Image (cartoon, rainbow, N blue to C red):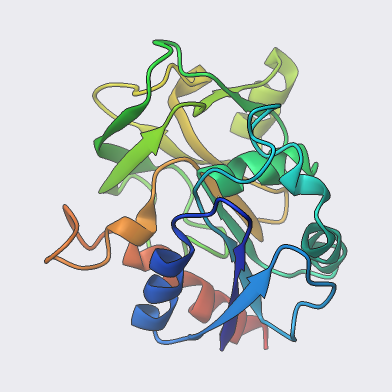
Length: 224
């Protein structure tokens, strides 16, 4: 399986995401923000970092990049996409996920290991996890507070589209403790914590994040 990893000017976790893809057993395919071709990949990861134009609003300019036009079109055909941190912001700005990510409630950058609860194991990126399972994954963001109107929050909860919630202490003031959500078909997932930094016991607080990358391999293979 070939999984594309997008790099924008300012991306800083693209190499970590590519490493996680390889650790899961897939081929990591580098995609540049100005590309007009997805190179036939089976899934895409939009990694974290600080993409160009974030000073206007996180992800707003990156969401208009040529590669994002290709991704939006491919999502309509069922392409699985994972957006991590800045990638989550870009997915919301591109209209692939509802809501928005705004400044943390404390107005400070937060970087720490964070406990999460899996709320939905029925997405393409959580097939190897179980609902109710707890994960330990790093979080690092300044604009990670998920916000949406009451109707959107009710719809996400009612449709089982809240994928992850923060446990113990909400690091950024996200509404309803939301750490990650999915599209209606479960093929697109965005989350603020960084699963690519929790794949190796030598460098991460756990290996819990690896399951997101192995999940998409199994989910895509079952469709094929």
